[in-house]
Amino acid sequence: MKPSDRIFCALDTVETASAVALAKKLQGTVGGVKLGLEFYCANGADGFKAVAETGMPIFLDLKFHDIPNTVAGAIRAVAPLGPKILTIHTQGGPEMMRRAAETAAEEASKHGNDKPWVAGVTILTSMDGDDLQAIGVNDAVADQVARLAGLAHKSGLDGMVCSPREITLARQATAPDFKLVVPGIRPVGSAAGDQKRVMTPAEAVTAGADVLVIGRPITQADDPAAAARAIAGSINS
Ligand SMILES: O=C(O)c1cc(=O)[nH]c(=O)n1[C@@H]1O[C@H](COP(=O)(O)O)[C@@H](O)[C@H]1O
Image 1: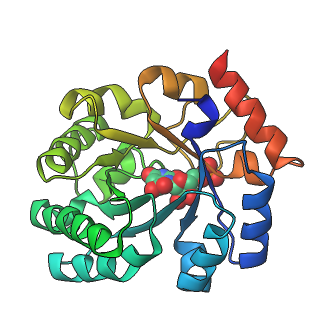
Image 2: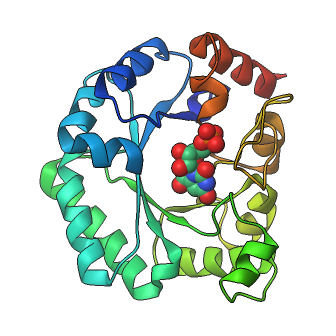
Image 3: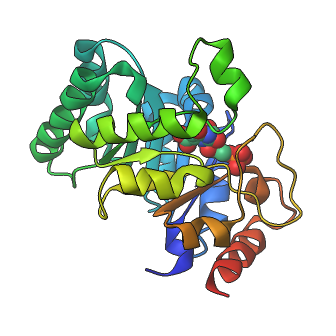
């Protein structure tokens, strides 16, 4: 796999036109784009379709977290769009994850699409040990991520979302072909912003990340395509 194919650029905007323009600019420099809550709440399925028309593979990051029946319904609703990756929260528990995985597989075959990877979000990269304590989780971040990783794998998910700091333990808790989707990526010298558990692109790939989710270091650059190319180059070297 080429280093650039591992990069999914997070298009965190409410404007369809700027998402489409950026997706076009990034053609050939990244493996795909990510549309998340901000974009989907503003533009819905029509916004997704407009970006999909650029030909870019799309990671639809809506982080579903609800009872199993509701999550299955949400997956049925977005499946016809044909996303490459979908996210749910692992903290919804094993039954919710099982239903999500089964529903994604059933719906993909019904619509003639490739089955999306259903990836479980573990502990958000914006959280640290103090944040976990604040919500009543006394385990260390690493222990909690390892627990949720094992559960996600046993529940039939295709992969998980974790910070680069937990790639090694996530791999140990799952399997060699379990997809590790990794945000919290910061090229040398770029601002961490609200991300607390970060690594550089090269460090994350060396540790075993399958997909790097990178937003602001690309989207806020004067030349986003050049920034994406530089990131891919840093992975290569
Ligand atoms: O699921 C995600 O993609 C995600 C999970 C997580 O724990 N942390 C995280 O930052 N993300 C997403 O990854 C992207 C990171 O963007 P930047 O911080 O701008 O690189 C954002 O779109 C987040 O929604």
